[in-house]
Length: 341
Image (cartoon, rainbow, N blue to C red; front, side):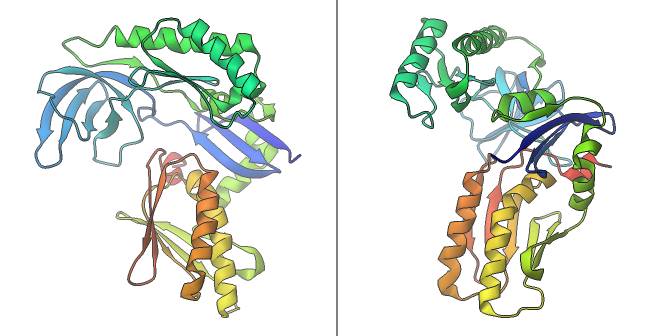
């Protein structure tokens, strides 16, 4: 089994967490002074945006924008949750579909029903988990999802998590009305997120200096550069602009079409990790190395397989007339370059 390590440390006095697999940095979370995703506000409707079906809202942390909302009038209070980080000069992205998430449980006020993660296949275990769900949720109208991490968890720990999330959800929903905007819950910080989401067995290091000890700081230095080396002398560059993120693939000294496909597939396998670590999202345009059109489907299959292992919502938009491939990726993190300033 490949060694997994979770290091909990600080960068420039900001809380940070790193996940390494076999010594390679796979995920990185760094706190910032922006509202954390997951934060829940009682917001006040401010002004609608004509033609977009959206509404600007007032929150304690400034303006927020809610998409595709109907029946909302200025001055009306409502509960919203932060879904990502705001781009410079733009409003916070929020949703009315609240999620109360912990290591084992997700309580869903707007989606009733008790469910177990589909990745848990053992029917006996699924039945046991549903028994816990029914016992802890009782006659609550809210929904519950028991996460895949329940597969190796103790029943008492799962029940405790369900209770905590249910109680928190009930407390927040009871505070939905009021004349002024208010922060009702803070989003989880990097150390809590590491405990919540990195659930596979790992060595956990909590001593100050663990980033230096595990080589995280050296790998962060590499992430400051646009160049990403690939096997066989190939490489690709990741360069964010104001409008989009440009990715350029090069084969090095080998100009053959076979080398082009090989380099493109190698880039596709590492691209989700690079985007995740660099905190990049939005429109992403891939300027691929030359390859025959018949190999496009092979490339797309490799990219889809790599993205299935990634937690950030990413849409494959497809090919452009110039032969570029485009993606649309949710902005759920701040750019690493902003956090390391």
